[in-house]
Structures are given as structure tokens and as C-alpha cells.
Image (cartoon, rainbow over all chains, first blue to last red; front, side, top):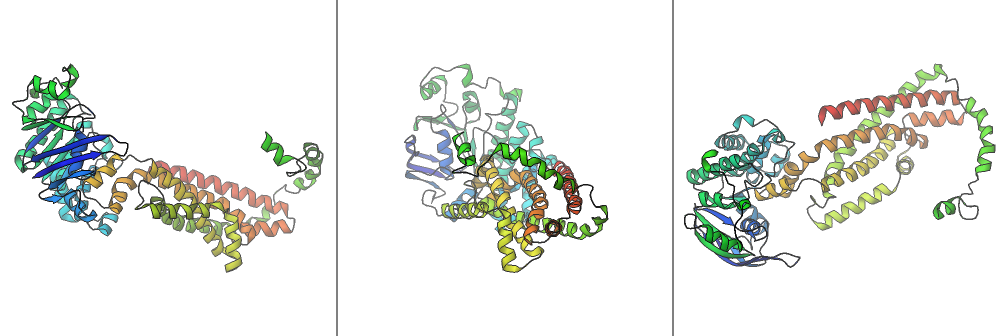
Length: 259
Length: 241
């Protein structure tokens, strides 16, 4: 379980990206965060694994405080949390397998990792992760030679290779075309169901949020303004979250079946 | 303009005079004529020192570039473990870079005596300075995305450098190392003049005896060697990058 308690983040420039947030995310839930850009979605996600440190309050993962974790503890917490990024964040110049093996770094000694001597089990885990997202045949291809959708699958495989309890996805489909977006979202949904991983996803396409969000929370200027099920969230709810009327840009506009 | 005037002026600068330069140009012609034709029978005596030059350049490039790799990562804000190491490493690098290779050669020859060893040490320092500087600036500009990914996956600092940064800068590192090797061939001709081994020693001897025809042989050989090394390096860069 992930728990935010009066959590705030004020950036050095004075911008308050998260304001006194209290929120519980039970284990295994698929939660989608919606809100305009700048509403604090990315900050919330990055507060979970400490990439963005809180300035007030606390966030705990399975009871362990992220804010007060020592560097070693923080690495331990992070190893149990896989992360997926909008721009995939792959090393383009190296192979798909090497990218996925990054998910095993937490379990690899420094000397071993310097010499690229990953343990057999770790390579096996990485290959299984690639299998789960259906691109195991690309293991020895350079990451830059893959399509956007395939690259995001490598990103997902890297997160899965950690064998995490939590998956954080920061706008995972914002760089993809509509059909590919649905494929990737369904991958995430399937992983959530099959592996029972708590999944937190930032989305700015409201129709996607409604289809895939077991639970939806709405953010506006750093504050929680909505918390409910995907089924409950209708146009009025989204209008409230956004503080304006909705436009075509707020929708992916392609039904899930098209993927 | 003002700075140029300052540098060339009679009172403050080096007393640069165009008229005198042109009138004295003819006097050099006699000496220049002694450079030609090259004394081809001198070629066999150059082979040993030329091979020594190549060996010095290889050894210095391998040791210097290998050392430069960690030094470069410590000298970039992106990959340094902390501010103290960063500032220390940068300061040492700028001090090392401030002196030209020939001064290191003079110091090492004074300390260790004439021979290739002081030359190799001077070239190693020179290679560390050049490659670490270029590489640390390349590291400054890497894509931060993979670094974030490695940190999020629970990777340590060294692991992040190894798997998120190093693959990004590897092609540049190879290119800089080959460039350092090219520079070594050129530099070893100069540092040999102060007794640090290689072809430069021979240049110094022949110069002292005014055997300019022998010098021409050496100059042509250096030119050819540098040319061939450059061709090889272009080929390798294409293959590896």
C-alpha cells in the first residue's frame, strides 16, 4: 500500500507542485491520475519513488517512509517500484536486452555490473519480461531500431524485470499513436491483473482514463480535486477537474477496439 | 586591434616589423635550399626511432585514455558523486592542462634521464588532459532520460554511469582516444627534442649537425606516418561508431 500524508512539494523556484496531499492507494489497484499539465501529476508519481523529494509530510510504501529513507533504503524502495516514462528513457545505442537488464541493477553487485557480468538468472528474468510484452525476438536489436510502441514495451519490460510490487507510468502513451496507445494501455492492464501490481498511471486523454482506470483521481494546481471510480467519472467530473470545458484534444478519440 | 598593436609594438611587444621580415626573407633561401634533396641513404637510420615513436604513442594513448575515462565521469556535473570530488577533479585537470606537453617532457627527462620513459609519461598526462576534458563535456550533454530510469530502477551511482551514460558516450570516447593517438605521433616528434625518446631525438641530433637533408627525410616520414594513422583512425571510427 502506498500512503500520502499531508504531502507537499515546493520546488526551489517557489512553485508548489503538490499541496497537502493525503491519499491511499491499496495494493493491486490500477489508479489513473488526470489533470492539466502542470497540475502536479508527474510530481505525485515521482514522489512515490523519491525522484522528487517531498518538502513536507510523508509518503510511505508498504509502511516505509520514502522521505526519511537513507540512500541505501531508498534504492531498496525503488527496486520494488518499476517506472515507465513518456519518452521511454531507453539508451538508444545499446541493445534491448541491456536496457531491460537495467531493471536488474538493484540485485547486481557494483563490480559485476561494471564488467557487464549479469547473473544467468537475471538475464533469464529480463528475457521473461521481454516475452511478457511480446518482443523477446528483439532482445539483441539496438533500441533505436524499434518503433515507438516497441520502445515503450522495452520500457515496460525494464520495469517488469525489477519484479516490482508497484508500477508507476508517467504519461506512457503520450508519445504514441492512438492504436498503439491502446495496445500499451492493455499491456499495463493485463500486467496489473495477472501480476497484481499496484499501477499508477498519469494520463491526459480522458477517454483512456475512463476505460482503463479502476480508480481515477483528479489533480488541479497541486491539489486533489476528484477521487472516484472510472465508471463514475463523466464529462461533468472532468470539466470540474480541468476547470474548463473539454475539447477534442482532451480525448484520444479512438475506441479501444481499434487497437 | 588594440591588443594586436600591443603585441607587435616596439615598446611593449615583440617588435614585429613587416619591412624587416620581407628583407630578411631572402637570407633564409640559402638555408632552405640545403633541405633539398632529401638524403635517402639516411632512411635506414630513422626506422628504429620511428618505431619507438609509434610504440610510445600507443602505450601513452592506451594508459592515458583508460585513465581519462573515470577522470572524465568525475569531472561532469551529470555523473560526479559529489561537489567536492567534482571541484577537485576539475581543478587538477585544469592545472594539468595549463602546461604544454613539452614542459612535462623537460621535467620528466630531468627527473628520470633521457629516454622513451619520460616521453611516455609526458604523453600520458597530455592524453588524460585532452580526453578527460572532451569526454566530460560530452557527458554534460547526454540524454538525462536513461539516467532517471536507472535511478528509478534502484541503480547505484556507478551503475548509472556504466549503463545509462557510458553507452551514450562510447562512440565519442573511441573517437577522442584515436584523436589522442594521432596527437601523440605529432607530439612525440617535439618532445623528443628535449631528450624524451622517439624520432624527436634524431631530429635534435641532425639539426645540431646542420644535416637539413636528413631532416627532410624525417619530416616526410612523419608526414606519411600521421597521414596513415589518420586513415586508420577514420576507418576504425566508421567501424566502431
